[in-house]
Image (tube, rainbow, N blue to C red):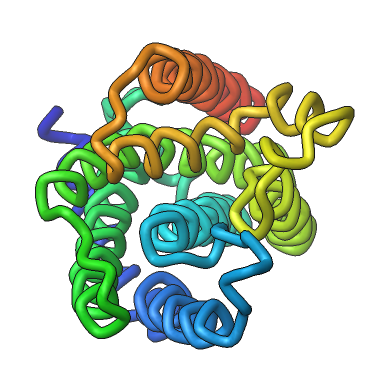
Length: 256
């Protein structure tokens, strides 16, 4: 664990030195929150569209913001591999799990800060639009979304390990697009039903958004919260373990 924390400290400094981390992980979600709130105020109430209301918008944008954690994790690994930095570290006693934790810890801290700032801003916005959010709901939603943060970071670590510095970000962009659309951040698939809902339910992104919204509404039923939470937790565990195994395999190949 000491080796992982030491490596995490180095990666934390790299993140703090990069202005893009502040732009994409903190500023951009806040801009989206304000813009979509303005859009929602322009939608007639008779339309019945609720996806842009603050109680659904805040968790949706929180998940959308987490997709950029995937991108930063991917870039961190692929850049270190391209510069032979990791190859030199392989000579140390650190294991593959230490390296993965070293990348994950600062990303999780950044993700927690991102969601906390967004939810604080969402609460202020909810007071302005006269639809106050429940602080307890914000707290439980914040905790629940840490699992989806682990999932997206694991995706980034896998892509960064398998692909080059040029190819990996492009693949992450595809996942960002898929997760924002099929995660039902910008539209309500449950009201549409049909094949679109089936496609969304076949991927974990739908459940990431669902647990955030259900927790915010303090709706802790089996269908609304616990089953989606189990799905997200299982996917996060599987892809996290996959990241460790893939990194170990790549590490051995580089040393061969």
